[in-house]
Every structure is written in C-alpha cells, then in structure tokens.
Image (cartoon, rainbow over all chains, first blue to last red; front, side, top):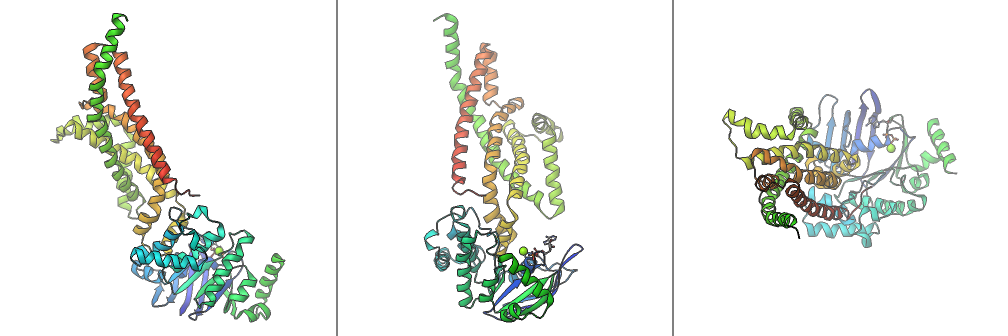
Amino acid sequence: MIEVRGLTKAFGETSVLRGIDLTLEKGSVLVVIGPSGSGKSTLLRCLNVLEVPTSGTVAIGKARLEFRPDAKPRLADVLALRRQSGMVFQAYHLFPHFTALQNVMEGQLTVRRTPKREARAKAMQLLAKVGLADRADAYPHQLSGGQQQRVGIARAMSIDPELLLFDEPTSALDPELVREVLKVIRELAEEGRTMMIVTHEMKFAREVADRVMLLDGGAVVEEGPPEQLFERPREARTRQFLSLIMERSF
Amino acid sequence: MSDQSERLLHIFTDSFLPLLRAGIAFTVPLTLISFALGLALALLTALARLSEFRPLAWVAGFYVWIIRGTPLLLQLFIIFYGLPSLGILIDAFPAAVIGFTLSVGAYGSEIIRAAIVSIPKGQWEAAYALGETRLQALRRIILPQAARVSVPPLSNSFISLVKDTSLAATVTVTELFQKGQQITAAVYEPLLVYSEVGLIYLIFCTVLAALQRQLERYFDRYSSV
Ligand SMILES: Nc1ncnc2c1ncn2[C@@H]1O[C@H](COP(=O)(O)OP(=O)(O)O)[C@@H](O)[C@H]1O
Ligand SMILES: [Mg+2]
C-alpha cells in the first residue's frame, strides 16, 4: 500500500506541492492528470526522492519516511524509500553505453547484488515481457523511441519495486509509437501492478485507471474513480480542464 | 658523393641509434609514467572539485590554479634546483616525473571535470532511481560516458606531453633532446642532428595518434546523443 500525507515541496520561495494526501491500494492504478506546471512530475519525483520533499510523510511498501523542512533525511532512509519505486521517465534516460540487456541488469547487479547469471535471466524475461527479447543486444541509439521506452519500463521493473511511476511515458514519442508503449502499460495493469501514471492520453487513462486525480497549482482538485471524474466531475475546475484537453485532442 | 654529404650521412646514421635509445630509455618511460600517474591525479582532482565538501574542492582548485598559472619549466626548476634548499633532494628522473605528473593532473582534471559536467542530469537520475548511490552512479554510469568524451582532449594532452618531456633536459635528464644536444656539441651539425631528433619525436607521436584512433573506435561502439 502507498500512503502519502501532507506532502509539500517548495523550490526556494515557490511552493510547488501544497499538501498532497493520497492512498493507493496494492494492485491499483492511479492516473494523475493536470495542466502543465501543476506539479505532477514533482509529485512523482518526491515519491522516488529524486526531489527531497519539504515536509510530509511518504510510505511505500515496507519503507516509511517523514520529511521535515529543518532536517536533511538520512541517506540510508532515502535509499530504502527510493528502492520501493521504479521510475519511467518521459525522455527514457536509458544508459547509452549499455545494451538493452545491460540496462535492465544494472540495478540488479549494483543495488540488489544479484549474481550475473540470474540478473541476465531475469533481464531477458523482462525484455520478453515488453516485446524486446530479440533486441537485447542493441544499444539505445539503435532502438526506436517506443522500443527505448519499453526498455525503460523493463529497467524500472528490474528492481522489483512495490510501485511503478510513469511520468508522461509517451509524450516524447511519435504518435505511431505511442500505442506499443501503452499496450505494455495496460498489460502491467492487468497483472495487478501498483502504478502511478502521469499522462495526457485520456482514453488510455479511462481504461487503465482505478482512480484518477486532478492536480492544479500543487493541490488535488478532485480524486475519484474514472467514471466519476470523467463523466460526473464534481468540481468546475475539473470540467474546465477536461474540456480544454478534449478540445486539444479533437 | 661529395665528402661533405658522405660525412653528414655518417653523422645521421651514427646518431640515429643513440638518439632512438635515449628516446626509448627516457622520453617514453617519462611520458608513460607521468601520464599514468597524472591521469589518476586528474581524476581525483576533478572529483574533489565537484565534491560537496567545500574544503576539498577548494584545495583541488588551489592546486590547479598554481600549476596552470606558472610555467612548467619553472615548476621543474623549483622541484629539482629549488627544493634542495629545504633539504629535499630528488634525482633528476623522479623530479621530472613529479613535475610532469602535476602538470597532467591539473590540466587533465579540467578536461575530466568538463566531461563529467557534460553528461545529462537524466543519467544521474536514472541511476539514482534504480537505487544506486552517488559513487555507484559515478563509477558505473557517469565516468564511462565521461571517459568517451575525454578521449580526444586527453589524447592531445598525451601527445603534448611527449614533446614537453624535452624540458627534462634542463634538469639533466638525458632524454631524447638532451642526447641531441650532446651529439651536436661533438659534431657541430645542429641542423642535421636536431632535424633527426624531430624525426624521432614525429615517429613517437604518429604511433600515439594511431593508438588514439583505436581508443576512439572502441568508445564509438555506442554513440551517445
Ligand atoms: N528544480 C526546480 N526548481 C525550481 N522550480 C521547479 C523545479 N522543478 C519544477 N519547478 C517548478 O514547479 C512547478 C511544477 O513543475 P512540474 O512538477 O514539472 O509540473 P508538471 O509536471 O505538472 O508540468 C513548475 O512551475 C516548475 O517551474
Ligand atoms: Mg511534468
């Protein structure tokens, strides 16, 4: 289970997250939507501690960490919390000097200290899952964007995280490559992976989400099951955002 | 053939082996040892300058400032002729190694630091996201990519060093250039002998440039953005 209480993040004077609360059951999918600059990426990065939250509590799986504005968290605690989640980046950030296989082995070797043979077997299995078993020995620059992102997903799963975080996983992709990535994510949802996904693909969001959350100005505007949020939004702000998004995609 | 050209030919052929021997016995080891030690020093210095621990960054910056701001020739003189006044006596060869190592360490650290900084932030983040520590990210992800970026400028430093080792002549190391001076003093044919010395430097540098291309090809097995 994932539990976030009173999460805030400020960059200097600028408040970017203003007290986020959320609970996510194991095996469920939370889709986060919201206008650009609303703090979606920052929220995901705070859960992965790529940004250190200013205050609040984050609990993922067995790790729980309370952040305070006046104290730097201990590195060991940060690492323990961070290892509970896997991150899929908008721009993939694959390691260019490693093959696809090596990208998926890396975390197993250095962080989990899995023996090489075992790490390789598991990496091959994960690459097969994302449909790239035949490209295991390719370097990232030899892969299409969609393939790179699928390697990114396999890499994020390689450390057996409790939670998978996706930050606009298809936004950098050419339209014809979006589908193959969404298909992989959909399969993971069906398998019962716990995931938090930031996306602008509303049709996909509706299919895959158990809960949808609209973020605006660093605060949660509305949160609920997709049918409610998309068809009977309670907040005027939600309706406004949805009509803007629909306009853009038609 | 005239007597004169025959004499010159003799001088050329008689000097070639002694010059080559001086190059192989002194110039080459001086270059290799100084460069290897200098690279290690350069890496440590670059990391120190990027360290979040301020005093360390400051000490490293001070060292680079001194070495880059004074002539190499002067540094060699201070090590070999100056330090004995403090009771520190160092033989000519090790004194030269120290001087060149410090030089490669300072200039190389700037190259390596720039290469590390040039690696996109996303690479650090992807490594951190897997749970790697700063040291693991550096060793596994950042430095291998930085190494590739550093190969061309570091190869330049290496080839410059081959030629800079001629400065060791001034602290009595009988390397290639010093040997050329000795032969010139005996036969008094400066144009011929020094050209021959140049030829041997050219041979060394050409071989090194070929090695550099091999190294670059190795790193080009992947091409980054
Ligand atoms: N490192 C940073 N320093 C300062 N401001 C930042 C930083 N990262 C994000 N921000 C600001 O925080 C706000 C939210 O950013 P972000 O989380 O990226 O929004 P989103 O992903 O919803 O588009 C933006 O106004 C952005 O400018
Ligand atoms: Mg974003």
